[in-house]
Image (tube, rainbow, N blue to C red; front, side, top):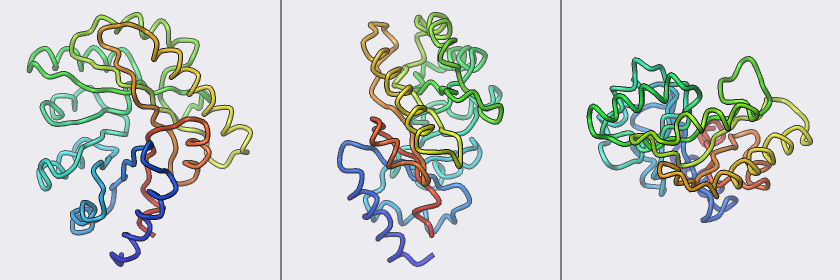
Length: 218
């Protein structure tokens, strides 16, 4: 990876998305010496799919970056995120919410989370179906150690623009609806949707946080 190419790719993305969209750089499979240079190009947020990899980054870089857990989170890994993870994008089931609450209470640490939505109901993806969202929120709205900061969703791959727009627009409507809720542990700010192949469409539909990996490291 030539650093001048990386810098250009990052600056190009930032110019496209503007100041109102947060860029989370997905660093899975990327060498440590490359990740260490991201801060030189204004990157503040990095994401990993697995806890072990994210913890490894944290141990190397300390407070240089904000750390995002973007993959499916196993309940037995929650304890390793205590006191340092900045945002969990994948709150996708009640058992995970209960474990986050349990570990948060044990260590007096509040987890910032995004509820993961499975709008397209793909078997290959986890997340809460829209018709189940009210029930899920009802069960977690009084949790004291989960701070719901918004929603995350992923669109299907290799689909038409109409399908992309449908998925992303439904996520935005959900974001707008629950942003008005007055629950103590709901401080809705982020709508995380859009990756290398579909971030432009996601932003057009209201995304204010994108997760980009492949496109930056070409």
